[in-house]
Length: 253
Image (cartoon, rainbow, N blue to C red; front, side, top):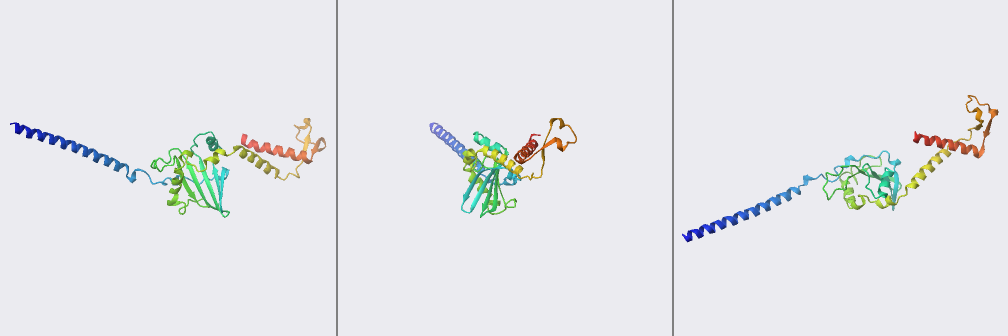
């Protein structure tokens, strides 16, 4: 009887140990399957698959060149499409959605390519965390402003993502320092000077400027004898001031 009980007890222990072993094996297999499913290539989109979202900025020349680079026969202009983007960076804020940064590349004085990076809310979410560059997408364009299908474009556009992915602390920009240091006041002054230069270029030599008496302001016909003709530097200054006011009123209305 005791011998039979001993065998029964031993059998019970063996069954228990086997069950524990099976549970451990099941957990191990389950973990492997979970890791395997997380590593499936189809879980995330191929890097650069969203490049088609980026269009060439037609208003490129209205942007601000905040940085330039020269390396041998290569010259690069870096544009940003709004002063608000620069202001945000200089305040320590995130670049706003809609920011477009364009690299205009020249070689031996000839335009060679354009590289455009654009930020939009929700962009880039299809990429893996390791490859994602925030909400930026990239695209390369030919000198004719068409999507570049070879060279640095096409399948090679993924290099742009890889390069910028290392700049996370600078909002994925390679020229963050230049944007932080850029003087926006120079842009405002440049635009003012450009406007005045354009106005000064108008040929006004044959224009006549006359000083009309106050009581003649409402008259339909002005007698030349009752008006004083203004000439010389006074004439030029009056014309320039009037044209400048007319120009500025276009933006106030």
